[in-house]
Image 1 (cartoon, one colour):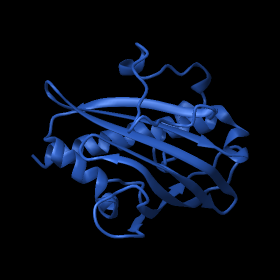
Image 2: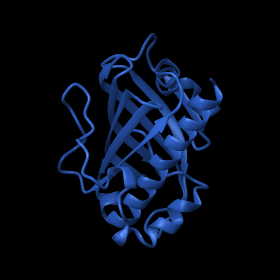
Image 3: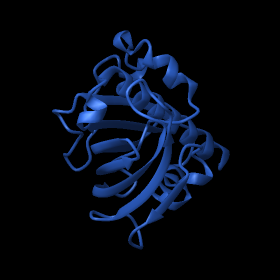
Length: 202
């Protein structure tokens, strides 16, 4: 799957799960911004579970890009990433794969488990955008496919980082509001941690 967002220990996800039916999009997304795309490709347009968000990071673009693409070091700055291993070598490129794990808390319809995610890079443009897809499998829970897209744009005050992700699969689609809440909370946490690490590295 993609950048998993069901993040254990993120209390916001539990709160959001009870209110997601009326959950507003992030303020930055309220004006219907352009779709998040890499080399013309975006998330799954038919997916029922989706979330999009963005933030401005006051750090050099190359610092942010290195943090995001040096996937084996994600556990050093992302609390919810337990392990991450590249399945090939060199810079990320179309076809590159990495396998990572993240804990998932119990929900009303699924057990607590650890998901094993195998992500395959589909599109990448150096310091501009990144898109990967793939499944996530755990004991009692699976996500058939996740699609995750990131874009990075220099703006006044730093770099605008935008991201959008979708999930598909019968299990997660059995409770779309809860799945969407966990996805959203996880993406917000990911951006916050990326921003904190990048700005601290300056």
